[in-house]
Length: 251
Image (tube, rainbow, N blue to C red; front, top):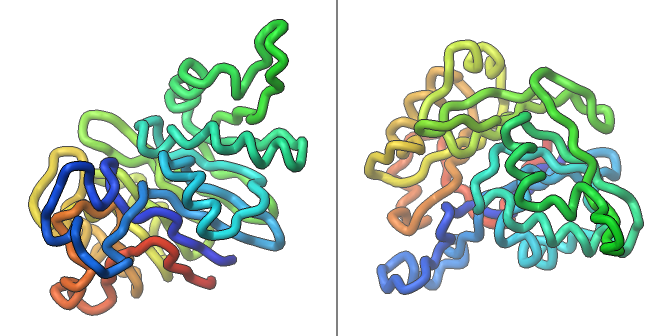
């Protein structure tokens, strides 16, 4: 299984529109962050976690030729608004793409992007995605996918565990029942928004604290704002790293 970080940035992306801070003007390519998402490749199949606002750019950069399934974490715009960019894959392969999400996330997606899930009468637009509501582990292309409920401020989101890997973006706390699903990890990618606090996301201190409880030997902090320069990675404890776009892992 190969995991690629397609986007490591927060909802505004980095650089942020209108900002002239040192990170937004950084020459380090690892400070150029598209909106958060990942790609999982396994036995010739390609799975996306979220369709970020920057999906088209990410797909072109990484040379993505097919998408076989999508796992959605939640329905916030930066995680779903690239959904229309899946049309290109349908035009090439004429295969409806299955997507998986909580019931509330699917409800929002189907309300906002109805044409992607249902053919409108006389519209000529074919459905592109098949929606599958999830609330328990399921099998996908030979992988066991475990949804991990997360608290995202006053709302909820899903993380995903696949084998010894977990992806937990957009969370401010993790229920005890979800922590029980995350023992024995080799690799953890987790929301670590910025140095200062935030009501809807772990800051770096909070992400480090929960990751230490899980005892994962390698922890990648993602969904990063322009408050964090990649050059500051030396401030992190051993075993912790900042994500960057295009970062890859083999498990």
